[in-house]
Length: 204
Length: 427
Ligand code: SF4
Ligand code: SF4
Image (cartoon, rainbow over all chains, first blue to last red; front, top):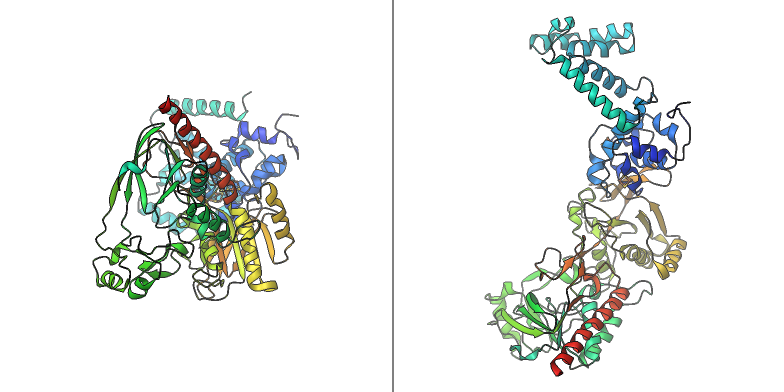
């Protein structure tokens, strides 16, 4: 079994988070006051507010945390950060945890934020520019062909309007625009990935 | 006033609250010459504004009265009120202090009869009650004021009210020609007993102290419960005067918070525990107090008091720092929002009144002090230099009892400086 296989409890989960998750070293500073949980506008929409997630990490609930959809619900409103009496960068920890769970393949399947973010990223790194046409099509069809057609028809008038306003170019379907130095871009992304892998414990 | 009242063997105590009075008296009773400088018109400080002390629930008048009696019986202390230290230079055993003395417009002939107060019509916010009510612009700061001498607010000097006050005084104590004076004193040691002020609750934006009438501070609540206070001791909601029986206490309002005061103010847990008993005394079994807390810090022997309050059926505890308060415009109720740490349930609970247990901020924060004085990250005095010492809440957030102990220690250090100076001069 690899190091990252799911175990429901891991005594060293806090240490793993500190080491591999962006801003994870802050988790131990939480004093469980509850201000972030009470301040989050999405609070009733998610299973575990930040305060609880931090306690779960410290309790070693590895599986429950990493497979939870909670950190994917964060809208980056920063309400929690500005109010936390210990100045934890809560929003960033939420995103760090989401990313870590995603990299481990533990993020809940089909979670909309995760699916959209993945499509966006894959689209962006192809040429260094977002291809809005292929990105929207991919989004429409992410839940299957039939749903895709429905989505596309539903969005038709908006699409046409965007085209008229020259905000959407149908020719983008042929590959679309990108940055000039394509090999430079790919080298840059490869380097960034190498650094990230090293920092998050994914280096081979 | 001439500088001859002080010598290099005099101790200057800055601040006439319970700590300053203690430091001054301890030194004076050891035979040292002391000047006690207070910037307000009376001694007593924040202690005089308390209704009762924890944990014995006794009245501060008692402790203050003992100190005032000691003071009156001791010829070694000179009290200067309305006197603010504006500069200190020199070194251990040889300091020069510059003091600005604001005009009181009332001299020592005042008998405290109050005729001047009756004669004036202008009213000003009453700082003794934290501005919750108004008082006449010719006033005695409070019943325990020392000296028992009236004060004229500068705003009425030069107005018909000022003249009326002067005309009303039968003993000729009112002197409208008084001006600010600056005096210099030679002193050997200085004790800084500059005390604390309640943290400005309006800065805690989500609690809406500046927006909602029924969100008040713990110091205001203390005045409200005092029979000498603005409501005659009745616990009433500011918005509509309704009897407040369901009271929420919010702990760490400003304290233990990197965005406000980074330190634990130490007294506020005990203060709220104490105040739940005021609510109980006022309404009996109809009382309902709820303490919202991160953790209750009832240190050492205060644990017993905490246990006692825990057994009180009118008091409940919710482990949660309140996230925000909203006042219901129709009912006037304050609704507290947050998440209970024990179980992580969200709540939105209405109360008649919310009391913010505000933290202690050192009074000297933001004031220009001699370079020798080093402050800690909260603004308390860490070290004050060779011949200068801090006492009481200038040093740290302390309750009355600990402030008195701390001030006694500071006094002893100042005495040592004076003794050494005297030995050098004698040699
Ligand atoms: S606001 Fe900060 S200290 Fe309080 S529970 Fe949230 S993360 Fe922890
Ligand atoms: S930044 Fe995210 S976690 Fe924080 S309050 Fe906003 S939505 Fe909630």
